[in-house]
Length: 351
Image (tube, rainbow, N blue to C red; front, side):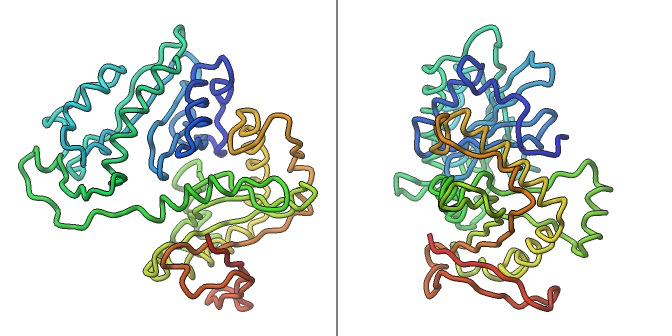
């Protein structure tokens, strides 16, 4: 496993690469974002998100001889004629699945499937747009974007078992996370959010346990966003953790703001962790520039962020949206902490 989110096969997303049609897809569809997951799988993955849910995972073998397009058939569970939709996917190289492929022990899901990429044959734009057309319909069902209430789990229905009776989640916070990621792309006088839902990679469980003990905590810190702040001259001045809250109940419990503040502070006091993240941010932001994504052009002047690493500060930002933003005011605050006697300094933004 790689220790960085940067992918080793970025060239495949550049002009002439096997995945360049997917880069064009993201560039021309505002509802999509491409993020790098170099620490996933055997050689990393690039993921295209819709409402901060996976539409496509794109992977390449280490020897560069095999590529894969991966999708999640579980998104079909609210699509009424899901078997017919799978037949459409099959025309794009994905496997046929039916009721017998539903896994009762895995929440009555089917899971991820993939289509192999023929590296001797360029993936054309027509193929990618057609494939996304199917997936867009599926995601609209999954998120009820047509405003109709789709609550029947068709997988459970076709398997002949009762519905769960639970209300279907609206994924509001995930939707807001991607919207914030898309809107926060300033390389001058503001924040550039370069990653979502960060999870620190470890070489093995022993390394993870050692890190948790060293920081005196049981769970990993998983910030919603990572960002670099640039000043009015375009110089990087700080590395930031960003946590988003859209529902009032999100303030409480293990995923509440207080718990996250302690976790974020633990990591920000780890100088080596911060240095590695800044180096990673430098690579990823320039990778976005090479692909002309996130609103950056190749002609834009973006400095080598590593040149500023010794002078950069750290910060914690809590972003409140929707009902969670009611009664909130933007500004600087200090939170009480059982772990840090002087409290934890953070800023509040409304989105």
